[in-house]
Amino acid sequence: MSTISEAVGKNLDLSLNEPLKELVYKAFRKTIILGEIQAGQRINEKEFSEVMNISRTPIRYALQKLVEEDLVDHVPGVGIIVKGISINDAHEIYAIRKSLDVLATLTAMNEMNEADFEELRELLEETERLNEANEIDQVLQKFSDFNELIYEKSQMRRLKSIVMKLREYLIYFRDISIRSKERRDKALKEHWLIYYCMLNQEKEQLELLITEHLTYSQTFIIKEMEKHLNDSNN
Image 1 (cartoon, rainbow, N blue to C red):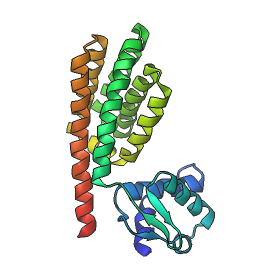
Image 2 (cartoon, rainbow, N blue to C red; image 1 turned 135 degrees about the vertical axis):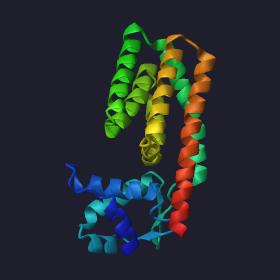
Image 3 (spheres, rainbow, N blue to C red; image 1 turned 180 degrees about the horizontal axis):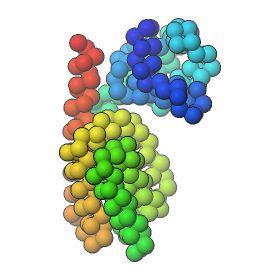
Image 4 (cartoon, rainbow, N blue to C red; image 1 turned 30 degrees about the vertical axis):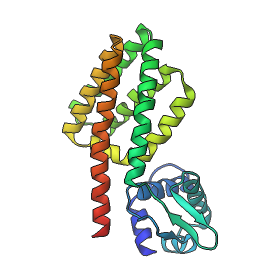
């Protein structure tokens, strides 16, 4: 149990101005997604509470949310068992995302007016400025804003909620991949190309760009997952 406590403890930031139950949930979630708690391990709520000196109520809340997200299983008579995200899960998530992102972007392209394209261009220019200033966290946020703006302009609310949920599962690995200056520059260039394809109504080129953009990210993330898996086994 001490191993789980130490792993989750590293990702638990109590300085943030959020309810304790949300902080505990996010710490568990990040730790599981990063593979720092191996699949098959049992989380003992009582022992975790004692070791971390946290009441059981926020821990119970966190574990229930993880059950709902299918990151852990509640096995009767046994307790909470970690499922995590496998490499097969990551492949599946990306296969779905490629199809949905193409749908969202093509739909947004047809719905957007001149003011919408100007808004997207200004967002990219601001991202460019932040990237040159090496403001990594703000660049990451702008990348998310770019995607969310396209989902919003597609006017497909259900699609947006589905895609955002899928993105959440791999957000930590995405952040690792984008923290490299080379990868940030490449991702920003890809976003500009997507913007110009949308602006010029280049449907086929746009589909190729989105697929390539996500495939590059997928390749990097799978490597990171394999690295974490190897580190955990050593």
